[in-house]
Image 1 (cartoon, rainbow, N blue to C red):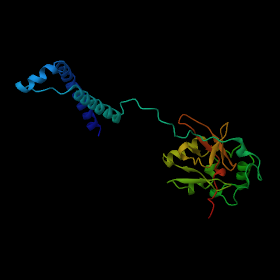
Image 2 (image 1 turned 60 degrees about the vertical axis):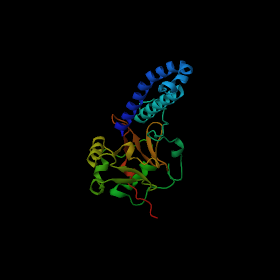
Image 3 (image 1 turned 45 degrees about the vertical axis):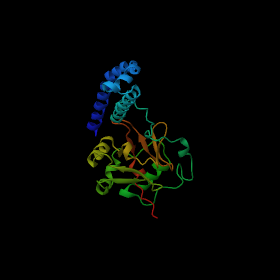
Image 4 (image 1 turned 180 degrees about the horizontal axis):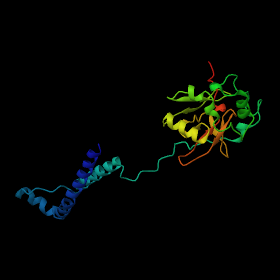
Amino acid sequence: MRLFLAMMVCVGFSQMAFLRPLASRTSAAGRKETYLRSSSRATGARNEPAPSEVRSLRRWGLGLVAAALAALGLRNQPAKATTATTFPVQGNEDIMKPKAHGSTEFPVQEVLRWNVDRSTADRICSYNRHFAEYAGYWSSTNFLKEASREGETFYDSVSGKPLFVAPTGRSWKDFEKESFTHGWPSFRDEEVNWENVRCLPGGECVSVDGTHLGHNIPDGKGNRYCINLVSVAGLPPTV
């Protein structure tokens, strides 16, 4: 396709190159047109194209070149509107305002996955803004035995809404290695379900229902969401 467009550019330029001397000759002939018109029939002289025809052909050549250059992306393009979402998606303090059960309407689910401690989960999820499970806690649970290496969905321990899917855009080995390095499950932008997750000023990471999840601690690779496993060990709601 690009080769075809390049050929169009060449054709257009060749047309313009041909028409410049032709226009000059026509222009010269045009000044003698009144004199030659009567003698052309007698002598059989061939009339040059009219200046209007030359201008039309020249415009056609210019149009061909312009169209080809535009298709090749060589012309100045208008600025494209920015539609991409900037991460992290920000929330406000209203999300964490006091509710019936701390910052959430309800306590954590009665049964949580991976054998995480429910009392610890309830305290961190609903009555906490700054503290976390101890570093490495996640690897002491059944998580590494039971999690799907093909992609695990992590649900809010209170509401059961999906919050993260990992690994996404990387291998399980990379996800596990990074989580071991930092001491908590660590997620990247593309692994976050932004419909249900927000980050507050200061970096606190929460669910839209008020569950404290962890914090955003950016590194050289970008945003890194350092999340308590007890906060994302819920079960999806049953219909």
